[in-house]
Image 1 (cartoon, helix red, strand yellow):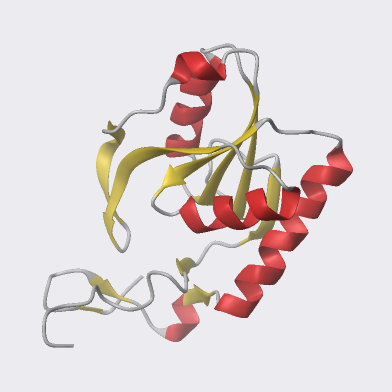
Image 2 (image 1 turned 180 degrees about the horizontal axis):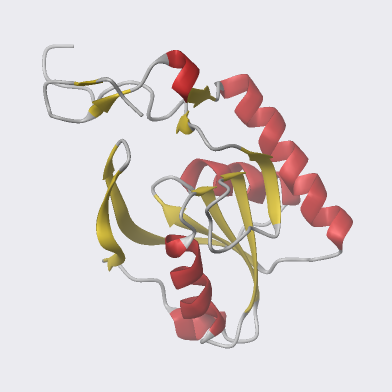
Length: 172
């Protein structure tokens, strides 16, 4: 896919190999997804983000739906462009799954790529007795779990506005 590596050894993709999401389009997408949730008749009690990628979308959707109850689960899977761990790993702090018993949970992530992170978290939350629906900005053709609500489908690497730039360092 990529023809070169950057200084850290990560793949460098050309603009034609990327799907680029800007802030304005993100706002439009989040409102669209909230509308799909409303139209479906699903009325979440809580919005849960898969951190970090789902945090901003979960916040935008919770505001759009008027839902104040929010939570998050920290999951690590991707370590770089097209680089991942063998399996998704839950990281602390942990969400109180028992508190989700009999709740309607809207689970939010940025993308269902392999779908393994989403599937793992759906299973975890559903095991607590919750009714879970999923929402993602993007899904990819190879996903093992198609989100209930998805804005776009793509097979390209996605550049999100919150991760388009490298982390801030001292002296900037």
